[in-house]
Structure formats: C-alpha cells, structure tokens
Length: 374
Image (cartoon, rainbow, N blue to C red; front, side, top):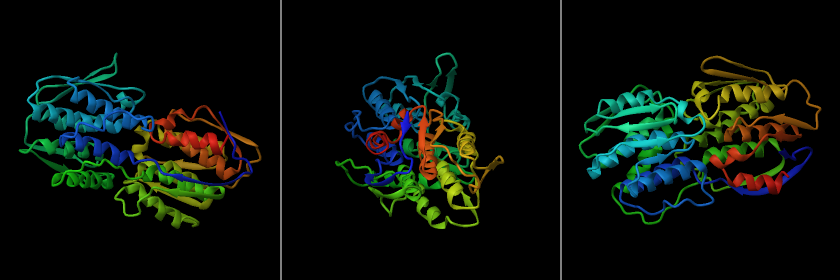
C-alpha cells in the first residue's frame, strides 16, 4: 500500500487511543472484583484488548480454552490470573491458552518457575502452539524476578487480589517499573470503592508516535486525550523530544521499550549521535525490533550500530532523492508506525506491505491513514 507524504503539509487533530496498558489492567481487576460486564468486543478495540476480553469472557462462562491471539500482555497476565480465579472459585480444571504469530515463542521461563513452586505446571504443545495450565494453585509467597519482565510481576499482583493468604516477593531490579506502578494504581482504585463507570485514559505509547510525527512533518498535528499526570512510563517521550537537537545524547530505555523505534527515527533526524541503552528486550517483541528498525533506517541511508544492550543511531548524512521509500511492516504495529515516521521525515511517499498490524494497538490510525495519507 502507498501512503502519500511527499512534499505535503499537514494540519489535523487526533486523539491518542485508549491506553492498552490501563485497559488490560482495568478489565482484569474489575473482573476479579466481581464486574462481569464490559467484556463484549467493540469494533474500536485493538486486537490485544479483544484478546483479554475474550479470555475473561471465557472464564466467566466456564470455558477454559483462552485465546490470547498475539497479545503478550494477555498471556502473561492471564496465566496467573486464570490459576488464581479457579482457586478462588474452587474449580478444578486445566486451562489451555491459544496463541498466534510469535507469541508462542516468546519467553515465559521465570513465570513458569514461579508458578511451579505453587503447584502449577505449564505444558507446551509445539504442534498446536498452545500452552496448558495444569495442577491446582497453592497460596503462599510468590517470588518472581522483576528484572526479566514487569508483566510477570503485574500478572501475579492482579492474581493475588483474590488470594488473601498470599503475597508477592519481587527480587532483582524491576524492569519497566512504571507498568508495575500502573498495576498498583488500578488495584488501589478498586480496593476500597465501587466503580460502576468504566473509563480508560489515553495511551502514551500511541501518543508518543503522534508526538514524534508532529515533530517530523511539515505543519502541525494537535494531539488530544493524553493525561500529563499519568503514571504511564511512555510519557517520557515529552522529555526525550525536549532533549533532542543535541550533538550526542544517551537515553536509558529500560522502562520505555515500546517507544524506542519512534525515538530512534527522531534521533536520526534531530541528533548527530544517540545511544539508546537497555534495549535487549526489543528483540523478543512482535518482531526483532532492533533488527527491524536498523533495516528500516539503513534503507533511508542512516547508519546504526548495536551491542547486546545498546542501539546507536547516527544523524542522517546522506541525501534521499527518491520520491518513494519502500519499507517492511514485519507484521508489527510499532514498525508500521516507525516506517511512517521515516517517510514523514524524508518528505517522501511510503510503500509498505500492509497497515493491518495497527489493529493490534491503534486501529483508529488506519482511518487516519485513509483520510490524511491516501
């Protein structure tokens, strides 16, 4: 498909989508607190949110085959949550998690080891690419290494809301600590009060893309539905954009891995040299995002380097004289958006294989593409 960005001036307004991070947590914590509504899938839902709704609705209806689709958050949250839910209801049943895309191949080792100490075994079926939860959960102290994935910690935290005789022991330095704080804020919200109204704040991950696009285009984009007081970690994009324009810049991305591809594109067009640290986990996302962003930037004539935990982006030194750039999506929503940023910065049209992965996190962006970039 072709997106028209060459030599264009833009002026439009757009709201950031609902926060996936908040949405997942609100749905799960509400469900565990007895709210069994708000689980029907809406056309506006991203695929990841639809997956969490499907899983919770299946549990509600006594169906223990849970379809996580490609959503890593859904799988990592629902494994401990499903085990705790069955325990709290006195139900003895195995649970099977269906996966799609690269999800089956993404690591779960530390979560597996934690739950094994509490009577739960996770069994993989390579042929069907499903993961089955077997055994009965026992209560106690759940010890988990927080440096591996904040989602493991968050999943257990939410699960423990229905296990009164259990607690969590987080060892190591937690990664993406803002997501853990976000989980706690949602748990606290429902701890002492009823909340009949279900409202989700805007997503700073999607907002980060929009703010980077605003930075790189000719014209202006007015971005709404972003709470400046949010505890979402990706709000750090505002600090990053303010710091750009430097000869050399270093940025620790331990707590903001999702927005690194966007930051890398901005770096190529605003700084002479930028070093992004703590980026190793980007290799096990929906795509290998380090390899993908390097390939995209290389196509645009931009030099990059990598180590195990760093990505270095050098400022653009070559001119780009083509009317169109051809970039791949890697079946990854973040990489579709980074491709758009590259084309916007180059003032050139974009030929990309598909925009369908945007349904995973920002389905509304596909409508914006048709209205503003076609």
